[in-house]
Image (tube, rainbow, N blue to C red; front, side, top):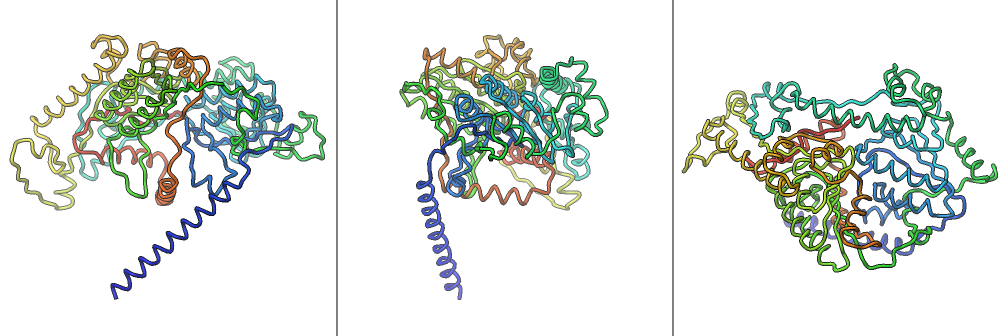
Length: 595
């Protein structure tokens, strides 16, 4: 009987595998038969659905392309930049209509998107923003403030009440379940462990978070001032008013131009483009327009073989861990970055490299490997580090291998410090669960990281010394890269978090600027005027994408009921706890997001 069960299970698996291959082959043939580039007629309006996150780069998904060929490129800063520049030059694009609601992108990425829309407006073509039944939040309105006209339905939401950052602490919960955090750190601002050891934020945490919030507030208020002509004091006074009937409030105070539904907006756009009222408005989606080539849109394509490689490095910095067959790592590993750097430096046409870093840090040992790989690449071609939303702790560490470092005004950067997070679960395991242990060891420190008992004073000294050694190595990398002495680096380090603007004043970055500015710097260093972009990471393998996409959907379904903040914290803690005990961390103090 067992034989037949195994036989039929194997047979069923084979049949399903063959069917999957046939399906993929059919989809591939259908995709190859599709028109690779859409035809854009005159007075076409480019529509952009702008919601949720705006990542710096989105890796192409071949699985989605096979079954949804009309979807085109997913919205990212890279694709937004490309489509807006094409639309500005394309004689057949008459206007852009952005439909937005609750945007969650980081402020550094929002500033880049703001710049791209600002550049589009120089074409003289109209830019419209509208919202739906969800309404706009401040991040969406920040981008919408550039529009020629902003529209909203009469019954929806409009957030205009300032910004908030919230701290979460687990000390009380740990005490209730009988777990004692064992904390080791260097740097008085290195507060990554505060959620597990405190019940309230330290003065240092409040200080640096307040500075970040003030920077974000100034960025937003200045955009509103630019749109409305009001003073900063007047805008702040509006933000302090009770948030009642906010949509009509926005119209009355010149924040929104008009209450209108989509069909009414279409009519106004047709009138602006001098189209007959009874004709249909020609539109092209963002994804479909991404398949239009720059040359077809009327952009000048550089006649050169010279290239600048742009390597997008995003996520927590982690040691190489074998992935399951149905999942893939979303962090930064030394081997993955080295492969990309080697590929770029092996190409004789690549004259410079820009590494776009979006990372809160991670394993200190891996951060040092990343630094060394970047340093080696910089011996072959100029390397520029461009900091995105966050490049702190280990993210900042790896940037020290580059020749030049740039940060956006609101990039979260710095956090030069080390910590180790361990737990003593003796009370939970022994007293509450009744588990008893008997430990045999051959040498004094063989059970150094035993979570069933507290550390001895000698063990605490060992671990703290390890922290201090890691911190000194970090300081040495910073001092060498920034032309500082050890003490000068220490004075601006100690785990403190800076905005990009403040980091420039502290001498931690060379230039305040976005990716475009980093490309200009890289071209200048390489001595080239025209260049093509070579983007990394490259397109993912079809089967890897297929399995990882399915795995991601399963994880999403299973965890969708958990509040996002708790999911994010659990993800970070899981990353720390899944590593070998005693690993030193160069990680951001805590997740910083100003909403």
